Length: 316
Image 1 (cartoon, helix red, strand yellow):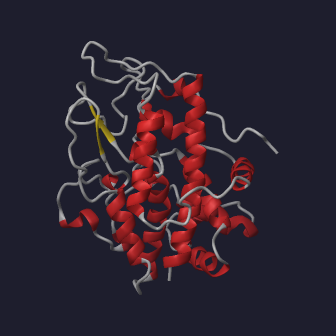
Image 2: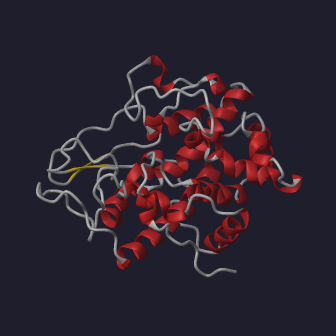
């Protein structure tokens, strides 16, 4: 078995424009893999049936042997909320305000797969980190409010179509909120309106778009094989259960990620971003990479446990 859990993506390859995701597919699929191992038999059977209602189920499971289809589909479902942002993956979805809630009644609607809005603003909560400029309150709806809303919805007798939609969003959002830069926006002299969770902290000049948020998103890669995910999950599941693994308090999840943002993300050598003459941040060094890997592994393991506990407790 591999002893090294995961290698960092070579960030220099990210110099083409990237959409703002939280963990690339590798992180979301790894958290889902871990969660699936912790589901009770009854919850797993319910999850398997609901995932089949997603319109992409056939694509996720083509050429997958029957015995592995439920696990693979559950893992792929964790990436669906990012997939619908890309026409090349899932056509027909509309960006309704981008990363800012437009203030419409549809912002937090829960109508199942009939909803063709991307809801990009559901993926994060910009807890303000005042580090040189006053912070601004996080906008709603956001990842915190939606996880709470969808968690409550799956306890009800809503239709299976809507429950399937809620399930795949919960898979994704629970992973999202454990990426520290999806739980904060840092307010500084250079970015008095916030840095959008590190998206505006660049390591290189345009047209290169290599930046802090993408660095953290990429810690688990984007296209790992099932074998790689299985090996990595086995190593992580061999670790002690992380603190707070059984917590259903979503606000505390956000607080934990926010604390990691301050202690492990916005740290040396990342720029303090308060000198107007300094436009770029130094790149992460070896020490930073080591700490980033440690935090990312801990958070993915925690996300997997919490997702399983949430579904075991609430899914009907």
